Length: 247
Figure 1 (cartoon, one colour):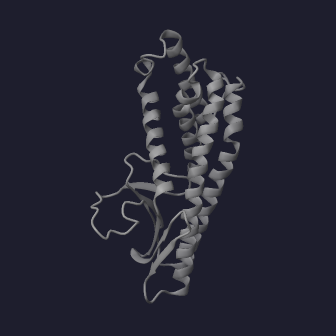
Figure 2 (cartoon, rainbow, N blue to C red):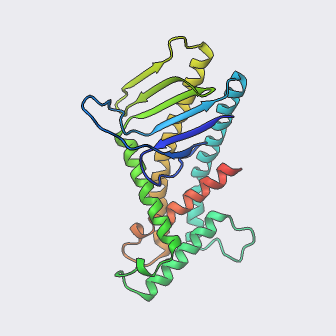
Figure 3 (cartoon, helix red, strand yellow):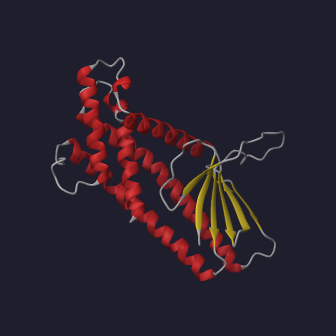
């Protein structure tokens, strides 16, 4: 069985697009001479010993990532449809992302009509607060990704065969086992490609949330609507990716 995980130093960081699950990173002890990768998230791919099963697991993970990227392609159009009133609670079978978005925006409208900009958050439900908290964690995760190395590890049958660090300036450092087999080298290359593609998709998710928030802002009257709408847009995109991942 293949396992795709990120050892993530940002508390509460969501799983990025792809097959990944997040694991909290242990506390970092910085010291003189510490490597530049210290404190960076680690994308770890653990593969079975059977080469064919390992390759198929990576291929399936790639297909899943591409499906989520295709969903991101349609995200803005779907948000715009909600903003224009093209989706209603009365419509049977309304997708979960649209339901979540309509619910949050209905709640925000009700809160804004009852109070001014001061104390607005105090009138919102725990669901809105949760979305806001998760968006903050996601924003911190994106910042971390832009300012740190990407570290990718590949394990076969729980044995580490390769570790590659990639910086945004193109700096690449790889450590491989001395008796590395050609097929294992190919598995690490494919795992590295998957991780880097997922990183790119995560950054694209962030820009999609920002654009979605601008669209959502048309649904509310507040002059700070675009900022206020960020958690709602994030919740929509997160639910969209979750639904795609589960199919």
